[in-house]
Structure formats: C-alpha cells, structure tokens
Length: 448
Image 1 (cartoon, rainbow, N blue to C red):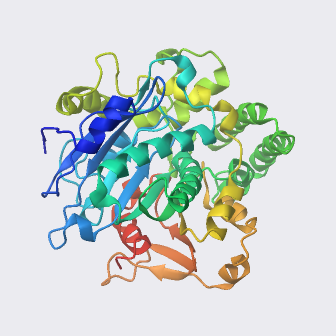
Image 2: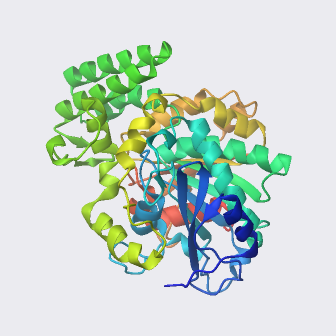
Image 3: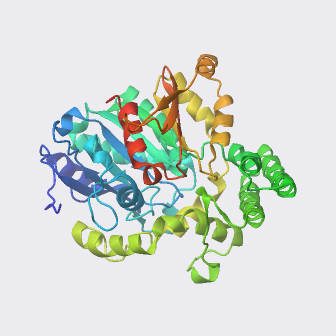
C-alpha cells in the first residue's frame, strides 16, 4: 500500500506560510490509496495525520463518510494503536483485518495532542496543557486538511474516539461546529461518537466500587476501602483541586488493585501485568504520574507495535524527522495534561446536544476505568431539554449475526443522542468486538 507522496496546490501556499508540511494528494482515490503529512499547528508544534480512502467494493469513497479516530492516554497514538490494533486495514502483523472500518468509511488517524505518536514538538513549552489548546490545535489541522482535500468537504465527517480521546472529541466537536457555522472550516460535520470516554472522571471513580462489588470482585471490606478513597477524590474535584484529584485517582486505582488481586482496568475478566517503574525511562519523577502513565498509556505502546512503527512504518512514511521517534514524547504529553485529567466536560456534551450535533455514547460491558455505570451517571446529569424523553425509551437489542439469537449490544436513541451498551467488550471495543463495533459505526453513520 506504498504511495509516492505529492503536494496539492493549496498546500504549497500553506507550506510558504509555515502552516503545514508533509505528503498530501488531492487526486480522486483509487482503491487502497493512503496519504499522510504534518501540519504545524503552533510554533514548534507539529501534528501528524494519516488518511486511508475507503475501499468498499461497491461504492466510491465519495459515497461513504469520513471518520476521524482519536486515541486516548493522553499520549496514545491513533496512527499506531487505533490503526493497527483496532480499526485500520492491517493488524500489527501487517495482515488484513476482516473487521476494518475502511470497508464502510474513509479513515483519518491523527496523533494528538502534539507530541503523541509521530507528532512532535521542538520546544517543551509547546505541549498542550488543557482541552482548549488540544481543540484549537485540531482546528488548525482540520482547516488545512479540508482546504487541501476539497473532495472531502461535502462528505459526512464524524469524529469517533476512545477513552481520553472521547474527552478531546467533545471539545473538538464543539469547536468544529462553531468553525463550520462561522465558515472558517469547510466540511460536512455530522457528529461525534464517544467510546468508553473520560467525560466525567469522578462518575467513573465513584462507581468502581459498586461495579466491582456487583461482579464479585470486591467483598464488603474491599467495597468500603474503595468507596472511602473515591469520596476523597470526589471532595478534591468538588473543591476544584484537580491536580490533587489526579493524585488521589492514582491512589484509588492502587486500592482497587490491592483488593481485586490486580484486576485489569481495561477488561475485568483479565488481570493486569504492570511493569515496574524502574524499567521505564521517564523524565518526570512524580510517582503517581509514573503509575498512571504506566497503566493508561504504556499498554498503547506495546513492544511489537513500537517496533512496527519505528521500523517498517517509519521507513514507508519517509517524512518522519530523524530525531522524532514514534511514542518518544508521550510521557511529556501525559505529564503536561495533568491539570486537565479530572476536569469534567459534561457541559460540553450538553452544548453539542443543544446545538443539534449528533452525539453517540458507546461503552464496553467489561470496562472498569470508564465503566458503564459511570457513563450512565453523567448522562443523567445532562441539562439537555430532550433528556426526559430519551430516558423514557426502552433499549433495543442488536445482533451482529442475523441467524443467531445471541445479543451483541443494546441501543437507545432519541433525536441527536444515542447510547450503545456493547456486550462482552472491555475498554477497546473494536479490539474485543470487531463485528459489533463495525455494525455500530455503520448505524451511527446511517449506513444501516
């Protein structure tokens, strides 16, 4: 799937202005076409993107939506993990993926915030420290992308996300809606999908105890201990002490692991296998950040994936700077966002709904870090005027195999809000339930 990069005329102007560098093409797609490039979103801040044109045998890419995928962390790479471990055309062994989303949409993977994956900064002051900067950076990238690739301006554009990527997707979605309304970005923005998303961190933390207790992973004493530390996190959040809340969140996870014999926060049916901090080469010393990074970003950079990205993929792309290594700055990405971790963005979701933007929430049944109970809790906090009618609806079962009676998910949808309960899936829904994830994407993008 190698492709010799060329530059479109519009991008030459951006290059002269110092806004964008990299490999891009504006020609109609042939099957299997992919392009990639960099956009300089701020001084010393360079964001990498990678686009695959849809490869449906019966439809041209122009008849299918464009989906942007945002990874979590913060510091997890969309072009790496989302692409090769979840929804891209190839797996990490470079074998075709049967459930790739490419058969139903063109896919845009972006390494954000800057410093993630193949994105990089030239100055330590250029890392994003809050959601506002993350969203602002993405507006620069999307404007450059749609200005150059006019063939995508009329195609329905969806932002799908996972974990912390969902928190970023909410903020990005609202800013994109405003930009489209103002005419500064030309695109057909069709909605956001928030997967196992860190929308209201405290609602996740306070529900860990009851959830684990209900599935026999805590006893009475364990429930009391987890609930006690969760209350401390809640108190810090209520006081606006977000860095202290982050530290206590890390402590709460340790209490959970101690009482559950090391449950995996990403799938409660498995156990975590944490590496010792001594094995990790971190440039920051706060022990709670080390543990949090180790638990929530390190697994997105597994050795096989890192070798693939820094080996064959780097060689294929040809435009990665010599001193830039995939995942090399992710620790700093994570550290710089510390003050943002525990801030809720429920109000942003409310704004999206009130503005008429389509919002889909989906969650894996076996996820702990962002458990479904916590998702339902913040959903109940929405001030959206149509929420009572949404709540009154009965959910409907979904089946990936029409010949089977095995339920794969439940869904409830009213106007521009939908919620999917994905069964037998953990935090990474497409990895655990590829068929259901693909079906859900088709439903969300109105292909089924």
